[in-house]
Amino acid sequence: AQSVTQLGSHVSVSEGALVLLRCNYSSSVPPYLFWYVQYPNQGLQLLLKYTTGATLVKGINGFEAEFKKSETSFHLTKPSAHMSDAAEYFCAVSGGSSNTGKLIFGQGTTLQVKP
Amino acid sequence: DVKVTQSSRYLVKRTGEKVFLECVQDMDHENMFWYRQDPGLGLRLIYFSYDVKMKEKGDIPEGYSVSREKKERFSLILESASTNQTSMYLCASSDLGYTQYFGPGTRLTVL
Image (cartoon, rainbow over all chains, first blue to last red; front, side):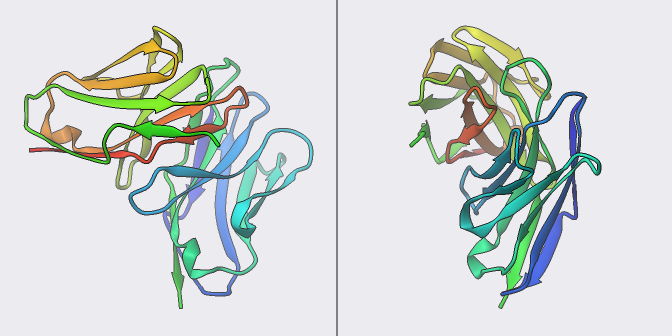
């Protein structure tokens, strides 16, 4: 069965500091992996996704994530945090071999950016 | 651009009322989903649909039903609203690559 664990429900960084949000997954089949961002009172917006091929994936707003199969991880990073990055971030893994489009979401990590 | 719209951003209903939440997507996606989101609990899947008139229960279907008469529209129905259904409801549709596209959400309050 597929599952996702996001380490740390709250992460606080200073503006200009490195952002690192951690995600570990388990999957019985080759996974598709996603990061979404949610700003207050809005829906989720796709940041980036990994399907196959290059393991370092670049997304919008300067974010990137690296798929590490040996560590079953897909951590999200950004070299320099901006105040506008404050939001909730969700990691997700594709939900198995049947093509129903299901995703399994982590519990979310709230990113706080301090001036 | 993919667009997923939800019928209301904010909704206030009374206990026992029948509530309809509607979701429309414009990308001809086969799959559509309803989630609820509560603080500390993340996103929980209520129901999903992989074709017109086809539906499957998610993780928390109790107290809800769904309808998908047309490909672009997926409705969530609360047969008799209760206070514990006060929540943020998110609709999504997905392409064949599993990418889900979300609507803006409906914040439902049941009094």
